[in-house]
Image 1 (cartoon, helix red, strand yellow):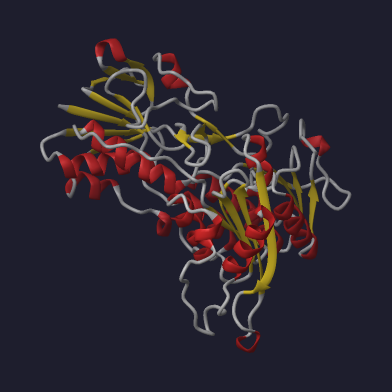
Image 2 (cartoon, rainbow, N blue to C red):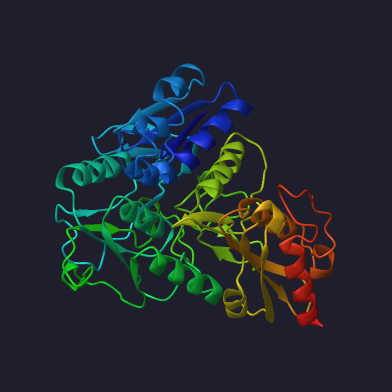
Length: 434
């Protein structure tokens, strides 16, 4: 039996490693078209910042490790040109054909470029691969640009706005709509706008960019442009082979991550995942999701029957020193999904004032009809990550607001208050629901 995996990053290598652990005799071939495998793309902004000194620090595992310790044949520079499922083989760009019994598609996603004229200019950069990062850092060190335009207000866009500002550039962020970090949450939008302004970053919302000539920073043309307008799933290879594409534009899979073609699975940033709150397919490309999907796809390709339960979209990001954690649905997004959403927002110290507590913002959203918690937002300079994870855990367990407000959370002055901000927000939400 031979398993072929297309894609050598988070989802693909998680799938290959899991399949190997479950079947020691399975022949596994991983085909990666790029020169590098298994790297932490989320760390690339911090390489540009200088916090990460060498790109090699972001590489999780080497080709040699996979080949020798795991007995997985990993090939770089191996671009798959076609999937021929009728004959159970993939054709490489160089003409080689490789047969398979099971196939996992983990082709990931690519930075959005379409619709913007002039993106081939030497001062325009995406930030997705090691090559992108090396080019950008070299450009910054040699050319020392003064004005940077960031196209896109998602995670990478806002992280890089902070990085570029810290490197001494004037920075402007352009967003095609008023959604920041992919969310329509008004609380989040206002807080981020104020934070960016405080740190001298221009924010131009509802400004779709069609050509580089439309960009200006501090009234002048930028000498650096970063493309961070989101990602588009790489589905063309799969679609040409007859794999069904879902309503989100990503590959449609069932709960076992199998496509409509028997024995062909998809995982990671190229595939849809079920949203645990809405019960409908969603496209939320995150590294944590890709790794989990890869494990399930690899297990099923190796003969198991495991299911991927779905995602909540739990994430956290730092924007100019402000931590922003989100999980589930915001009030705006919940109403768009048909819920009778009610939200409560509070500001409170994350620990006692006598222990140098700082204010954080907590917003919780619930469904008025059922009292079920639907999502949460936490923002602050400290104490954001673990509170976001508490909300995510509550969503996973299907807790209602009444249950959530009685959670037995830890207290000690160096870490939290007697009444944690999460519980205060839940109490306010319960009042609104009543």
